[in-house]
Length: 275
Image 1 (cartoon, rainbow, N blue to C red):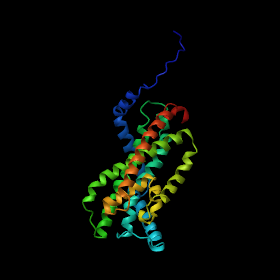
Image 2 (cartoon, helix red, strand yellow; image 1 turned 60 degrees about the vertical axis):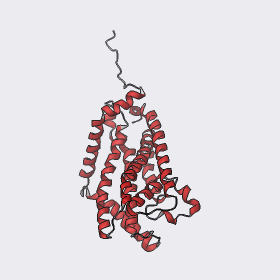
Image 3 (tube, rainbow, N blue to C red; image 1 turned 45 degrees about the vertical axis):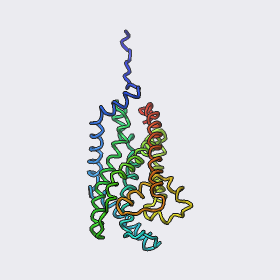
């Protein structure tokens, strides 16, 4: 045997073992998620308050522009509640999308040295946004108290709505994560994509202002169905085509997740070289 012989250790590429490895490395997933949460709030001078102030300030701006200036309808509910009920899922999606896109480069050191299922990295990054969503729910409770409104039985659907936005965010996050690893320019396109998505989603306005002829095309954006689901659960608003739009969001979310997983797994094979 040659003294200079090299031994290359590679992870088992059998698909079944890969998914079993994800379960085996579940503690690493929770460690990464918790570490990212602590780092995010530690680096901010106002800490957890930023998770509350960001959607709150956006709500105030949208209320001023769309309600006071453009005078768009609020479907019978206070305009701040209309906007904030949409800000909950949108802020989660936007933050999860951006964090997932940067997650691999942020973990470059450990990725290039230690084997573990790389899918853990973007998935754990999205959990940070879930913490922001929970903090923002506190503000929503305060707004309900301010306007002396109470949600009804539809509130029972809120966990399902949260699962739906998580599905859409994970699918889109896997796509942008893999694209950013393969094509570095995407890290500069991500903020633009988030900003464009904000204008293409009914965050600052009600879906009812969209003409009927365009509403189904508008709902091809999965965040339309997600936002309408949140508003139905929290405020009881049911625009025309609500069930269809939520169904479209579910289908689009599953499509994003399945294709995102396939693309991510393909990029993952050469991830160390790409980074």
